Image 1: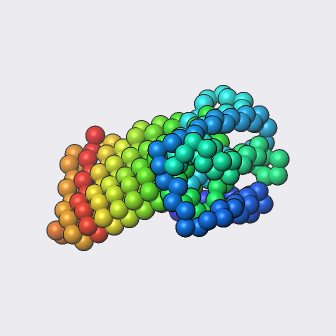
Image 2 (image 1 turned 90 degrees about the vertical axis):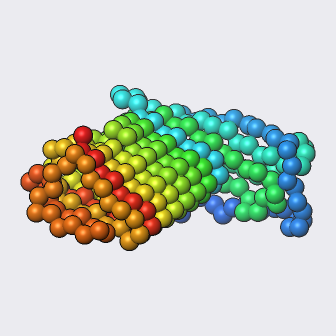
Length: 295
C-alpha cells in the first residue's frame, strides 16, 4: 500500500512536469544551412546567465539539460531560488562559436504558468562537430521538490527535503544529505548516495555502472537498488527493520555486521528479515556483486 501511494505521488510529479514541458518548451532550433559542415575545433566562447525567482506558491524546480553538469543545493529558510551558469560553444573559430552560441538558449519560467520553477536548454539538434555545454547551478529553498532530466553530464543534488526525480543518460549522480523520496534512472555512470535519512521510498535503476549508498531507513520505508552491469554497495544501521532481498546472476553477495532472521541463502541470493521486518530492501544486479554492511 505504501509503495502504491508513493508511486502515485511520483507519477503525479512527473505528469505535472510533462505538462509544463509541453506548455513552455519549443522544438530545437536548427538553422544550419550546410549539414555536411564539420565545425569541430578548439576555439571557445562562453557567456554567463543568471535568474532569480521569489518563492510564493511554487512547489518544485525542474531542470532540463542536454550537455553539461547540473547541481542543485537546498538552502534552509531561503525565500528565493537562484539559478546561474554558463553557455559554452567550442568550434573551428571564435566567430563560428559566437554565431552558434546565439542559438543555444536557456528558457526560464518562475512559475507564472505552472507551480514549478523551470529552466531548460534549447539548442540545434545538430551541432556539426561543435562542442556545446550548458552548466547549471541552482540554490533553492530546501523544501522544494526537484526534477532533473539530462542527457550528458554529472548531476549533484544536496540538502533537499522534497521529493527528487533524476533521469540521466551518461554521467555520474551524487545525492547527499537527503530526506525526501527519490527515484533515479541512469544508463551509463555511477550513483553515490550519502547521508540519506528519512526517505520513505528510494529507487535507483542503473544499466552500466555502480551504486554506492549509505542510508538510514525509517520504519516501513522501501529501498530498491538495481543495476544490470555493476556492483551494489549498501551501508545501513544495524538496527534497520526491513524485509531483505539480494539477488545476483553473475557475481557474489556479501553481508557483514547484520543479523538476518529467517534467512534463505543460496550462492546467488539472500533473503530474510532485519529486526522486525517493517520496511523493505530489494537489491538486484545481473553482472556484478552486492555488498551490504551494517554500521
